[in-house]
Image (tube, rainbow, N blue to C red; front, side):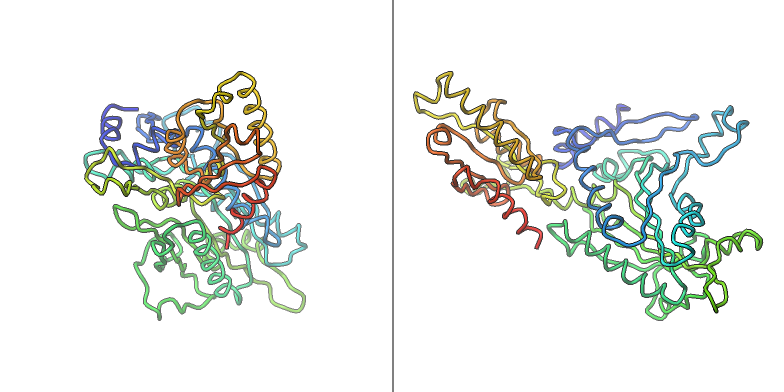
Length: 433
């Protein structure tokens, strides 16, 4: 990382410091073709968070929908060999979106459904955004860390539908996507929708009036409704839901256009309309991390200005948090608890508890052998976004009792180890409502 970025990050907000300290995300700089690009470097926690986000996106957009076909394509656009041996030019062939990748597979997918609509194509892939050089003295540090990377992991879904149903499907996906963003948020009111009209070439036409939004589906005007999140530095678009109409195909020469037309018995052939949902992994991470970050002050101190007393918490939704449950051992004053046999029994209990939780589909961070006080465990687990901490001690061995501490309420509840898994499943499922 270049020195000015490192120095700026060291002096930045509590969230940035937490994300770097706990291995979520950091910035690195690379020079390619004489240009500098900022890229994210993800540690274990950031990697787990990204995997969970992708699963939630995939489950909604692909697994639960009908006639959705996933594709993969290379980072590079199609290039000639002569371009490949010119390093200063070949870098320009990196894609900046997945739109063309999806459209290029339209004919193949249409054949799979015997020419019937609707069909959808989903793609997840790396894209390069040439966002220019970053000067840490001119931009907010959080924005640079969370959104300022040149390399983005795009999440794109294209829905090909009949022109007559395009407007209704556009509305459906807007509501579906907005609900998805709010579902995993502590403050859903920070998400809202703005409207933008473009001319089919990607040129923004500004915000629309209600009359502007009543556009004919036969028009080549592109209608974009953007989901925005209120970050500390201002609003940022986190996802675009666009009615592209038939603009993707009308740009093609007439002979090529024929291959994309849908022919229904007894009806005139037509070009399908395309409804596109486009976001990025970085946008999702940025919004939900900012949304989850909370600074908690011990009620006993009563003095918010004492920063040493601040407790940092990531109140991530349990379905996207890196871990849902942690296991910790309580050091007891009981003489028998310090014996070698007691330590072996506690290790056996924690390992079997970990296996039972994982078998039930609950992600576990087993810190029972890491040492440290319970307060240190709670501090770390809160900063990692872990929802529940299970506390085992000598009572667990003798009586089968454990305590479960909640990240958000800090309340500890005692229960018997035999019903622990079902209790945690019930609590986690209750948060889905």
